[in-house]
Length: 339
Image 1 (cartoon, rainbow, N blue to C red):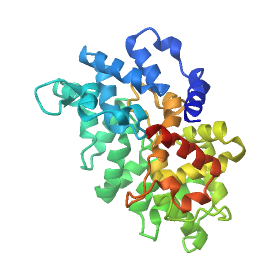
Image 2: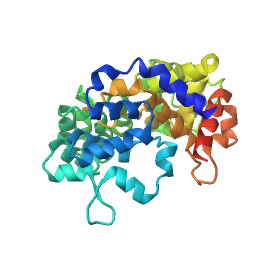
Image 3: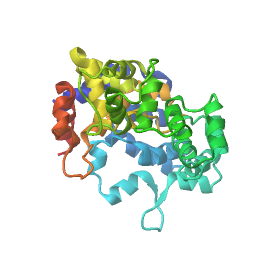
């Protein structure tokens, strides 16, 4: 069953990807394999290219190492030495050097900027620079840092900027306005649909809790009046396109409820919007979102999600039993590949 899901996800989108354009280069072939979910072939190919000096392979490997939210069973099976061999430059240090660090030290501006984007310092210029370099999705963390630690004027400037990540506008709004209970979830609910939201409503607060933190923190009842709006957003938003595709392919009769289940298992709105290309200058975001890799990331992330106490798989908890049975079966079947 697990293998059949993987094959279905892979075959369904091979036409949508552009293999002809990429088949001309070794990097292109490796990228295609990675987009199809084949780490066992793709990662060694990228590692070899990186060792030979291919800058794009180096940057891509550096980003995959730290940003893959749904690591494959193959990658999870690697020991520390095997992992370093795939993702790091060989040197005399105990852990090797990240290829991003190697390129940054060599003067690569994009590598330097991507490394800078990991720092918790509010920096509007950094966000502008990432956008100028073509790495819009990499502005996620710097945008959140401005929202959290930046001044009111910095937040206002960012909100007025047409290049701000649209999906993070609720986060900026939440931290810019008068505080309210479950304000982050309420801001998300206001963002994804046009109707006014009564912050004193138990139903709105219940849905806000789920949007803020995911399963276990809000109302997952099918009777919640906001549920259809949330499901409609999940099935139509560009950010959640892989979820909609996965659910339409695997749970066609129950697709909206399936999508809602993945929202809950992933940790709510502010997590579910982060299904990103590791390096947009090599893999454009729209191409990544339409790939088997993106759908596998959704599935694997949910399969590997655990409770806060780390004692249970989230999909096997009592609240999860009230989510889409089809989605839960997909998740539990996928997890068998890791055993």
